[in-house]
Amino acid sequence: DVKVTQSSRYLVKRTGEKVFLECVQDMDHENMFWYRQDPGLGLRLIYFSYDVKMKEKGDIPEGYSVSREKKERFSLILESASTNQTSMYLCASTTPGGVQSDGYTFGSGTRLTVV
Amino acid sequence: KQEVTQIPAALSVPEGENLVLNCSFTDSAIYNLQWFRQDPGKGLTSLLLIQSSQREQTSGRLNASLDKSSGRSTLYIAASQPGDSATYLCAVRPVSNYQLIWGAGTKLIIKP
Image 1 (cartoon, helix red, strand yellow):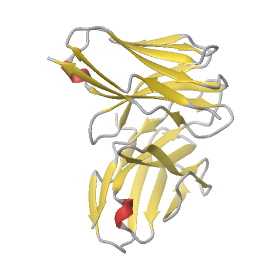
Image 2: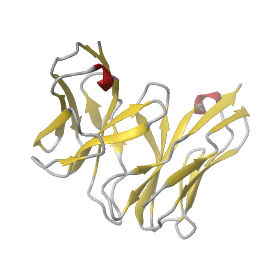
Image 3: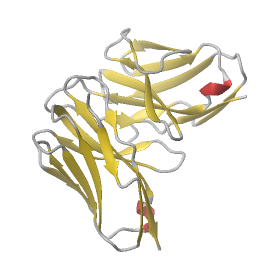
Image 4: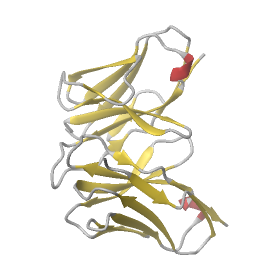
């Protein structure tokens, strides 16, 4: 019954490493999102994709990039991991906005620690 | 600019009580409103989705209402249980923006 799958539950990476976080959804949703969540700061949008190969910056894109080569997969890339990127990362998907648009479905999250 | 407020920020009640969590938003131009639950260190679980044309949705012991004209939604939890302890978040999907707009959440503790 799992609909949004994040490839790793926990990750520990070293400063300077290139990190890939993978997200796959099986609901044929057009829109996919990457958020990070930090205590006291809530959920902040990093990047958004509304179609294959399309991407839009969210509120905090610095230090991140994304890739969407297939509709079901949205990858978040940390080009050179830093300790301030230690966080919980959440992927979500939904249909385009409209009067009967789907709600957002979230993955179970990836807790990334950069040491 | 759409803003979402949740009251109270935290709530601690004995098991068995019925309780209400509140969510208010400033702009009624929304597609829908969604309530989520988050357990510590975990992802978000969708509880209820209310489309802008709907007044309420029910799932088991949960009932969510939406009054778009007044910018308010409530989440009613009947016969609360310790397993209901979690943070509850509401989010609106505005017509004018692709982003969900989030409330800060209500941290709920149900005491056995």
